[in-house]
Length: 568
Picture (tube, rainbow, N blue to C red):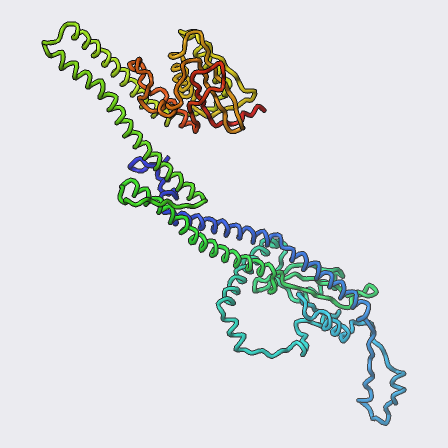
């Protein structure tokens, strides 16, 4: 790990989270464009290395070579007339007549007939990817597609238009790219055929070698301009005699390179894609950054309490909307916590003020000499009771605040509800009043997500209250049931005197108790703590009417969200 002088990891400075969100989006798009460009380069390399045009051009040229060879061997080898030119040297009166000349016409030995050869090459192979040359056995060139032109191919063109088109920006860009592609492609070809390429030789040397070997020669040559050519040299054979040679050659990198066009179009698409992507990213970044900035400003307003107006959070259905809702909920929860804290402080102040007032009055009376010993003893007993109540009250307040903090920080776990209720019954199996705890389980395995110790405290608070009021040898029923797969209910029945339904809400208030006779031992925080814990588990607790004839006392129902236990 590399640390700077302040002990901070230097590499953390390059973390994108240290920079504005728009810059992060731009850098991410830049990286995507870079990876896209690398992919484009690798695709071009793959395209060149797997170019089938080289094989196709080779096979196509080879097929045409055999076609030319077959035609010339069958149709162009003939005897040509040998004319007697003696009439030019003697008197016309002594010259033989035409019939006599005809009878005396002589034919040459079989040769490669020039006219037929030239017409065949001109009509069939003038505009091909390869160049065709025909030599006779005397090394005289009879035909060459590079020197044969038809008048029908000559067209007029406006030179100014061609110059204007050639100097266009797109045309310059296209030519630059094609030249760059051709340069790389030429390097690839040179590296691929480096062991096969020979230096360019004259046609006469090739013709002589072909006539000598009487075989087809296939070689690659490189010229002075570093262009590589594929050459086919085939003898024209008739009756085992060579009458001429066919030379066919074509550049491995021709001007009509389709791979260059494909690569150029792909590069244009890549550039267009990058431009569109960056443009859209800036457009969408505004829709992303603006609401986040708004949320940040709203939290500052909430913190500084600058505005008296109701703050309007962004109402969206995407992740920003979810974040806005959660921030709003956190703000409401914080305000609720502050409100509860203020109310709790007021309640604590009120509960502590009563015994303090009583203690002050008793102390003032004790200072007077007019009190009898009996009254003094009574006042001292009241002082002890108030001190005991204050001590119990302070302990419960401390426990309440500690539990509130623990509920927020405690870790939850998955709890099987049947097993948990059995543990609760076992906890109270040996109580002082011999009250029997009965459990009615559910026939399904349900689990809840809660903190086990805090949930146990809820049942302890409720059942302790029931035991303290109920008579000896009575029963308490813990019944588990569920109406659907999303909730489980636990009902707690007792056989005590019950609680009035008019107090169903007040019994959960802090410091409320209906047992005035025993206020020193019950401060009224037990059920309030129980509700706080159940609410933290997304559940509910309430007092309800008992639906059991044998259990006419109090009936509490606890509802908790569940998750189905997978037994597989």
